Amino acid sequence: MISKKEPQTGTTKERIARYLRVADYMVKEGKLEESIIQIEKALQLDPKNYYARSFLERLRSQMEKMQQRRVQNEEAKGISDEQRLEQISLLLRAADQFIAAKNYKLALQQVAKVYAIDPQNYYAQAYSDRIDQLIAQDKRTISLPASLKAPAPPPAAPAASRFEWRVGERASVAMYRELLKEVWFDGKVTDDEAKELKKVRDIFKITDEDHKELEKQVHIDAYVEALRIAWRDGVISQNENDVLQILRHKFNISMEEHMSAEAKILWAKNTPHAKAAVMLVDDERTFLLSLAAKLRKHGYDVLTAESVELALELLQRSLPAIIVADLLYGEGRMTGLEFYQKVRENPRLKSIPFLLMSGISDEFVVRAGMRLGVDNFIQKPFDLELLLATIEGKLK
Image (tube, rainbow, N blue to C red; front, side):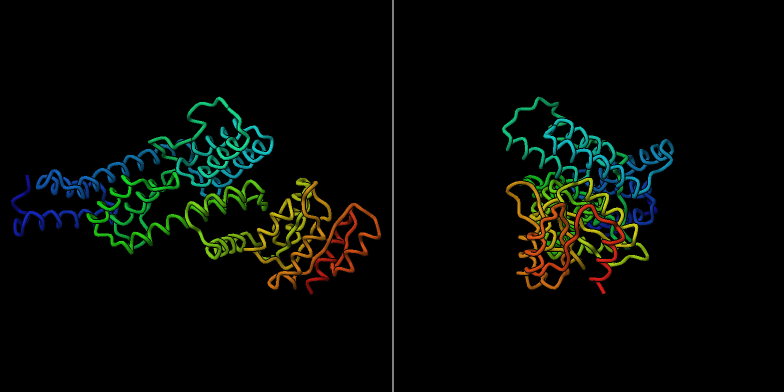
């Protein structure tokens, strides 16, 4: 029953609205239990009120998650966001290796481990989609547990529960944003989900314009986190590029949005003494990673690609200060000289210095490259100091 001290004026609808406004304020103040009391008073007046019932359900769910998070933090002594991303990055790199070996079962097991850390990780979900595509392409039948064929987050997931109010944000808006995250997790919104979202918008008084802005925010946030994971080792593999493309398609991420997000991530990766960005292109992964690591130690930001085709894709959204590419790749792949010609044909890229590397000592090949205009030709194996001096000379 409502206390006699409480105002009884106004229609039932107005009194319910007052209770819910107080509940919303209490949530922003962090007083969740007091907020629940206000919502329950509203429900006493109208037990079927959809807004109040939805508000109460999500609030109770949030309190359960907070309690689970407190318990987990005591057990794990807390884990930083950077540590979480590093763990996810290592697991997905392992998945990459299994995908390359066409061992999709073990790849999916790595994805499942990511869900144990972050049950609503969109990047892991895109990995699952990519693996499903590869299985279909190979027309292979793999007997896997259902949980590995399409790993899904468990209903209670304290490790991934990072629900938080943004500064100055209404509780109802914060909850709606979390609801959007849930319905978009599989990359699409069903008709039933769309109807439920419309009901919640009507109840929470969220405009269609606000909905579009919040939905885009959810998509961008998910894509930025995927990029952060993908760039942690400084290398975007062909498979990672395919997975990111799946996310861009799902969330309708434009090239401008991608470039903006990637630029911020690469800027954050720069050391205080960072120099220009160098693009390395070589199909020998071990050599590529080793050389990239050495250049980073000397202050350079490094973009890497394992093929000319992938390098050309990266150049559509990234602009390095210099390109260092191998001459020869696998059979049927574009050569370094063809890559150079493509770069010079593009008005946006044609002024970028271009160095070719090769284990071939054929002077005819060297002369052919120099005649085309290649800035320099470096013979493998080479001394790192020679490469550094050449890069620095071309960038002056």
